[in-house]
Length: 313
Image (cartoon, rainbow, N blue to C red; front, side, top):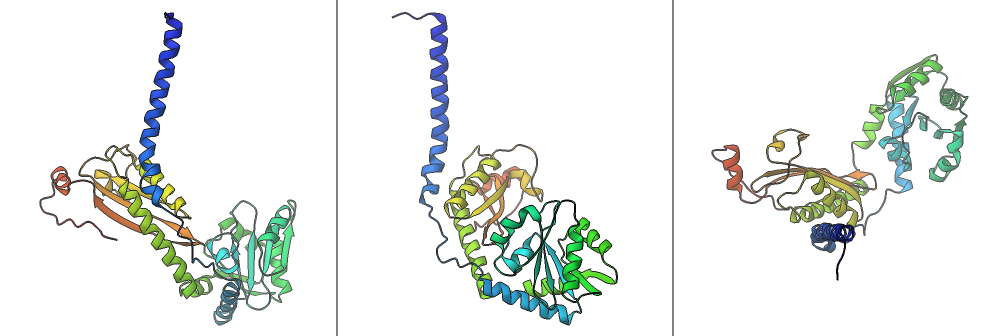
């Protein structure tokens, strides 16, 4: 059988493509069918924070407000909103907020077109003040103050509130003093309940397994991006969202690594840091090991004496 030059080139290209595809698959296979394949979700036994506990947090916040002479606090999207209400809401240029008065019921401020979604997420509290695009959300906040009998006094601003929201509220209020809400929010959050500690423990237990699995997959020539991808997949298979960042060799001397491309080599120090989130409670674990023979690292970096101990989890 004979083939012309054009057919030969087409067949050669197809063969090359098949070879490259097979090579890529062979590189992925150890990570997909090796240590990762052993992982199963570790989410059994995880109990979310109950609505009753969140209501108790609001009651405690109100007691702290009275003690600290704060008439109400303003909380926007973020961890404190989630802490008190269980609502996770992405911050945007449009105000979505919680107004927590020292006395009386809580209230929400929400863009009108988001009202439907907001009511789906709100688990307690029925007062939702909406605003159209041509209206002022800051006036809605002041209306809530007034409806709770707050005509003047001290308004606590939660620590993560963005300046433009604070400034808008300040301009709409007369006779009010804006103060830090830290005595209230920190006063609540600094003491962890058994339910919170349990979630934190779950997050750390899962992170330890993710570390072990990701370390099993270390290989010479690996990039830090590959390392993170492996860790992300490990967390995913364990049933949560998380990741572990890593730096190799001389880049570990930088607090947050180097922008230079660097692959893993025998004897490298590997510095890792990462964690996951379990119902809003995060782990944050850092570990340092040596890849291969520690002597190589000692020779490479000119360390005269060092006692290296691999960390056992």
